[in-house]
Image (cartoon, rainbow, N blue to C red):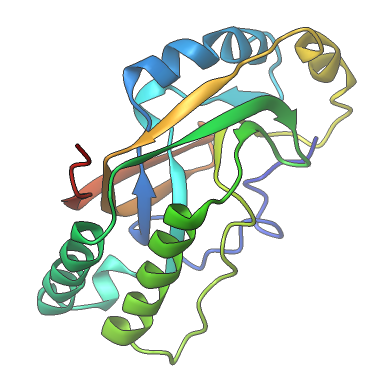
Length: 204
């Protein structure tokens, strides 16, 4: 496992207030993945993600909160309202845990609703904030990290501990959240301040 927060990997020019759009798991999700996070806690080189900071990234936006005006933040929020109003609430089955190079998490398949939310949100970000900076690559699949690597080391012990852990969980998506994210290398965490929330359409 490698240290995600090493500046050669997390190459954010600022560690605080990075603009993102997230979806946030509910308490049932956190309960479902607890066996995996309990195993992760036994290894000092992987920092477990507390339930309140679990998230699935829709997109990172290549701007920081202090670089854009309040009018732009409001306009993007209004655009997100229009996007989410046109997408019905949906769920994604997640499987894992999967040990990656810099993290441990659960993953799911990107269906039509996720693809629509992702594509329309990224297009809105370029429309509102401009395309002077290219958008970061889109997440390859919906995923929720349960732990982040904080040292460069052999993760064989963690992989062995997780070999019998099966954490099927459901990511229920009822809203999208526009947030300003803080990377905290000393703690091995990502935290955030919520800027606005945007409910998806209610499905009967």
